[in-house]
Image 1: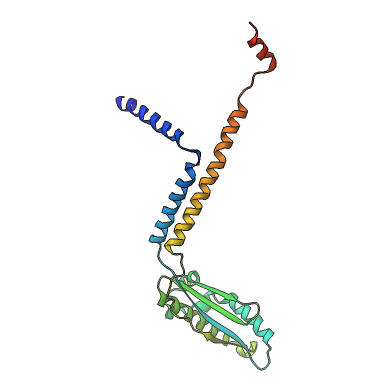
Image 2: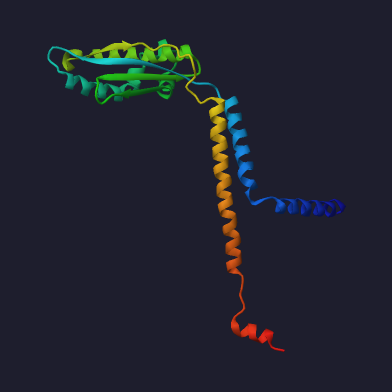
Length: 216
């Protein structure tokens, strides 16, 4: 019982101190909290490295560049299928399902080029994985080159990246601070509105009641 009685003055004191704070205190406080959270994420996250290998579609005797461009787009769509990734799992040291999570494929609307990118936590592993998938894609596509008249050839091998592709600690700190500042600004916008609604909801005496109260 005595503990609860002692806690009440402390609670009232904290509330009074909070009431004396300036209205804009939430903005810097939220910005600092966001920056700390962003810095913690940047320090604790595992760096990710991305390497890219390029494959080009070359038309044969009975095909033209437009046909090569169309097949490059088609091969780019099936590059992450299990049938293609099955040949790359041994060289990459990953299962086809893991390769699907770590490999991204992009094509160009103007050139018959296919970009195979792999993102892993090690630079050498990213390069090996990208080259393995690109080689597997070319091998799979060239099985039908006699009917399609399109041959996939390696254009540029992936090299181990020197720097991670993931965000640095400075960037995550800046993003966290901006996000926290935004939340603090929204809190400032909501707080005056609540006060305004409270004042608007207060009852105002009508003219008749005001006259009655003022009469002797």
